[in-house]
Each structure stands twice: as structure tokens, then as C-alpha cells.
Length: 167
Image (cartoon, rainbow, N blue to C red; front, side, top):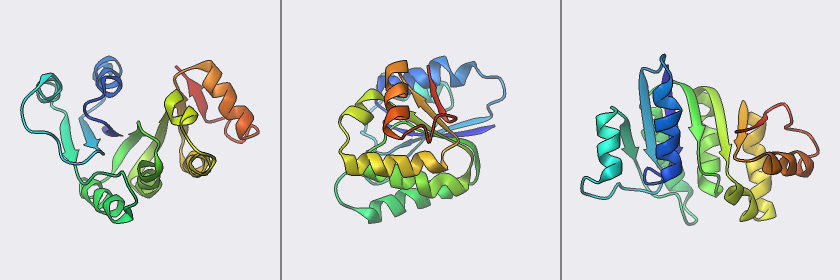
């Protein structure tokens, strides 16, 4: 199985997800981590060693912050050159990662959104509606708490109840 993870390569949440979930699965042949914040910093630190020791393929493109749709398209093209993934898992739900997630739908067998509390509590109403569009094409929505799962179910009037799971 090939897995694409879109997130911050320097986030302890992403590292722990790989360490305690993905690396414990027997049927994974390849893990690709797309670092959405732009170029990876130079140097070999703790995270770089972890990725290298575990044969995680690191990709980066152009940062997705700011008002730049061109960067989203560029990043999508970088990822799409890697081919089809059995699972695409998004770990950051701001404007441009959400748009990239919608584009990635065609490159994935299963699309999973990881909805952290900060993705919800810091989001404007416009961003929440954009996140809802991604939820419509996602196969699963994973949250970090039952409380957040309940708030999402309430906010979207049960539209995504069959997709929402909490850890």
C-alpha cells in the first residue's frame, strides 16, 4: 500500500502519527510525506534522521500560505508525478491545503482528513465552508476528540456523521 501524508514535516503530531500508526502496519510499501510549508530546511535534525531511518520519502514544493493559487497547483503537480496513492491523509486544513486536497481526490483510493481542534477553532466561517467541501469528497474525517466530532456533527447538521471518527 502507498500512503501520501500532507502535513508539516516538523510537527510532532505528524511524526507521532507515522511512528505510532503507519509504521506499525504490515502492508505499507511506501510512505510519502509532502511538507506543505515550502522548502525543507537544510541540516539533519531529529526529524530528518527519523524519516531517513524509516525510509519515508520527503517531498516539498512551494509554501501554501498567502493568497497564491499558483503554489497550490505547483504542489499538486509535484505530488501527482508520484502517481496513485492508496491513501492520502491531510493533516492541515487551512485554505490552500484544503484546495490541494480537493485536487488530490483523483490521485487517491481513500482520502482522509485529520481535523485537529485548532483547524476548527481558528477557522473563519468561510474556511469552515471550504473544509466542508473537502469533507464532501473525503472518505473519512478523523478528529482528535469526541467533543470536536460532536461540534462538527452539529455545525453541519449531521451531513458528515458517517464519515466522522474520533481517536
